[in-house]
Length: 114
Image 1 (tube, rainbow, N blue to C red):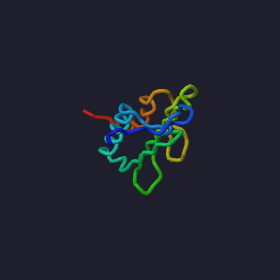
Image 2 (image 1 turned 90 degrees about the vertical axis):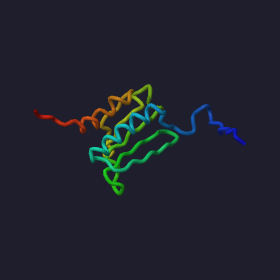
Image 3 (image 1 turned 120 degrees about the vertical axis):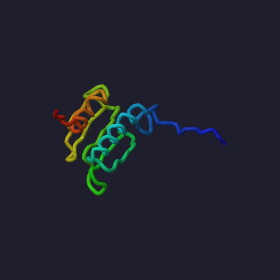
Image 4 (image 1 turned 135 degrees about the horizontal axis):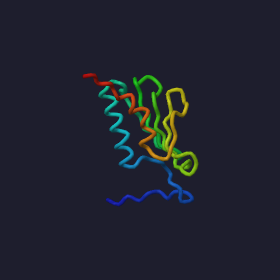
């Protein structure tokens, strides 16, 4: 009863793309800081056959302000990570998650005066 047998994937391809623990930790850390700063209020995760998407919302009833997409099929081309803006334009694309999150993290920086 305690054994879970996964369904076989066709042609050795995974049936669902997902985030690993380190990736999800990094994304949720940024999400938590954006919530604390009052920028975001809700999120959604979509795990599909071609991509895994983390969408962050200002309000739950709107379209997402940013989507962080992982598309492994683009790994050898322009990079599997993409930051997509509210209107569907790709803000940044690359091979590593850190530089993709940089434009969003810059919004958290504030100038501190003496």
